Image (cartoon, rainbow, N blue to C red; front, side, top):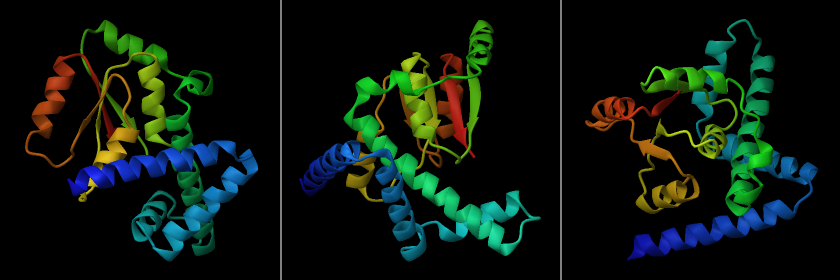
Length: 194
């Protein structure tokens, strides 16, 4: 009962934020994203260490200042894409004009082999926006995606992420490997996020 209340409250919150967000000029949207990034990644320090460590692994030659500059830009873009996803949730009819799909010939070639295929997504950009784009061209894909530990936040997040032809798998379930092979057998794409 309480979980259902929190789910409804979360969906109402997202609808309100997305309506407000879509009314802002583009420059203000990016400013809001910068503020959100600062609060989430500098004050709360959400995944702070993980993001910095990953940047150091990818760019070992960079100085400490350059790494922090990359960290700031990366987290600002992450916040911007997160807020942009609210816009998609609010105006799904505007989605088709926002996507340019490159490499569709690779998907076509994989389908001609009459098999499933793997896609690798990075945490650069927004994998969820890419999923929306793939659903527009009727790609049947399965994304391996973490779940939140709090049930109602999990329900809200997956409600917002819902798209036709997209299925989600938890990464650490005993059945995940079986479900991956099952998806490949059904000629679906399987997306891993690196």
